[in-house]
Image (cartoon, rainbow, N blue to C red; front, side, top):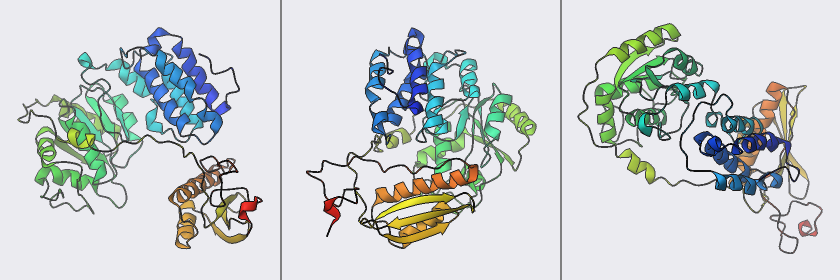
Length: 409
């Protein structure tokens, strides 16, 4: 199936090219890399604002239909069509997070450390976060706290002892994800804490007190100096398993790769004790009760009764001009500032937004404008999501054509 019969938008053409080249190979049609690429393309195209992009969905669905049962997650091909397709999607669509596409180091790790008997394949780590997976059979995990650069360096230097390395900013949700991912892999027995805490948080202290003292009946970490170390998405059973399974190594403040790697090797040499907890965690059951929704673009565009905005970043002054118009086209307010978040807050405080989708749209556009000023890139305000209904059924509430008779009093 070819997607080049009709004009394909440039932002999607390169990704489709990678997908189609890979789908011509049987090894790709059985590979988890290609399935991940197709899943990412489906999510991206389905939520796109442009109808031309959404019209590419049948092409992706056709490729999905020709996929064979997945035989392997990744076989380490020098040229990975699936991974490169995700990279192209990430380069052209803001919706694709960086964590969705593998770096060269990620693919190297997959080649060096294949899952044994498929037990960890496609299942670990079960919770998303900012981390890099090394050897799933390694016994050491590293938390770099707020440091973003260390995980990749450590994964490259500490093989094969290191199972995973990642950051953790917060003393509640961040710690919960770390704990759940470690408990999901019984090979991991040591957690090294290094780097520096994020400003305003003391996740490192919460980790230490969690190991030392546990939690109270309200799932608050005992004696922690953190602001809000409450672990609502863990159970008492999870905490007990974590305290038995994981040994903490305190390297808080250390950022030297050589020192951290040396500590990781030493931790890996320690004998592994038999765990008394053999039953699985209750958290998998809790996670299954969380409602998961598929993002979809709205079918109908509804204008905010309070009016609309025009965002104008000014490169000469480094400021953003945000004009607020009434729906009849009269300029009512002008908000000026350097930070998109402050402008958005001002608009909300002044009652210039009455719809959540409009607030989300304005926040996104202001963030884009702020980035354009910082990078010197071109800014272009996008249209809001949704399609106007036919003129027979539309009303002033949803009509964006200010010259239309429905806006006349």
